[in-house]
Amino acid sequence: MSKVDIEALPIALPEGVNDDEYVIGTYLVSYPKSIPVPKLAPALAIEQSTGTWVPVPGETPEVRRQHIAKVIGVYEVPDYEWMVPPEVQERQYILQIAFPQINFGCQIPMMLTTVVGNISMAGKLKVLDLRLPKSYVEGFGGPKFGIPGIRKLLGIKDRPLLNNMIKPCTGYPPEVGAELFRLAALGGCDIIKDDELLANPCFCDLEQRVKLYMKIEKQVYEETGEHTLYTVNVTDEIPKVFDNAHKAVELGCNAIMINYLVAGFPVLRALAEDPKVNVPILAHMDLAGALYASEWHGISSHLVLGKLPRLAGADIIVFPAPYGKAPVLTDKFLNVARNMSMPLYQLKPTFPMASGGITPKMVPQVMKDLGTEIVIGSGGGIHAHPQGPVAGAKAFRQAIEATMHGQSLEDAAREHPELKASLETWADPFGKGLGM
Image 1 (cartoon, helix red, strand yellow):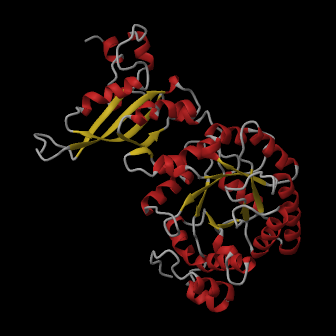
Image 2 (cartoon, rainbow, N blue to C red):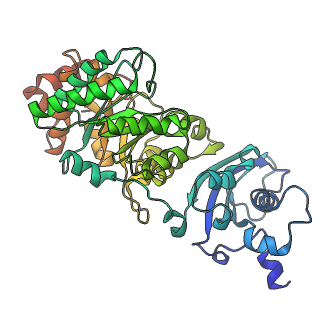
């Protein structure tokens, strides 16, 4: 077989592809034993690159050599070598397929169309990971501020940051939201965000919120000496989403928020790369479960919640924590956070923001798992505190400070009535058995 023919095949050894020219997708698949997956895999590669279910005249050897995707690994689990037990009805495999970067360039939409497009409908198939080459990632600016930039803005060197989601989620006028903002800020929240369910409704429009909230931010700073980032939700249709962001910044807002999956990765990226949007961007995760929650379909959580929004430019990413109300495996939670903050070529690290029913009692475990380079997010755990939102925020700050100094929450609660009330109110709110 000639070299030209080999280069045109949809298969290769892992060492046979240039790591800097291909995005490598790793997949989990499961098919009835009657389907020969090692023979099916090259068909999947062809389907997602140069061809279709039947040979077409335009798919020439020259086209294939430069543009065909290549199967570089087919690994059955368990790894049968001499026979398949007769009782086995389905066989599971890990597939690795290398996709030429030239097919889609340095962008996310066509990359995802390539690596998970039509084959997402090919039965039990889930994207486990994407290995992105340096040449691809270098085409992205990533987070404009990231962890170091946000710490510099707030003047906070080492402790975890505290975020509050204003509750109720929606349905209130700007004046009500402003008072809730004031109380959370006075209690010590470093960041206050709109709920993902409130963006620019007629009863609480964005412009009025920004004017009121930022006026209060200045007042609280004068009183406490601590700044608060207000991440106003600019989510909307195109081009209104950009109008919202520009208006918010013009009015003095010091951060913005986007529901990045419903708005789209290109919208998040455009906001991050817009010179007019010179403030941090908080990315909210809604819709994510529809993409990652199935064990046999979709895209793994660390890509949906971590690597891809970081690539697109999120400075903070909200993601579900296993201690609160979300059904999340701890190892998945940890992997999502790693994809936000561990080295990824030139990209700045993104702040992981654990959230979803978090209370002060959970702070030591969150910090044990993720360290101090995190944002701790709480909504009801602050606004539903029996002594009010100021006390709710103070309880979190007290829990953070105690944990930073190696003090147990029990001991700290003897000194701080706000923390004591919180621990008594939410001893184990979701029945997950967290100890102090």
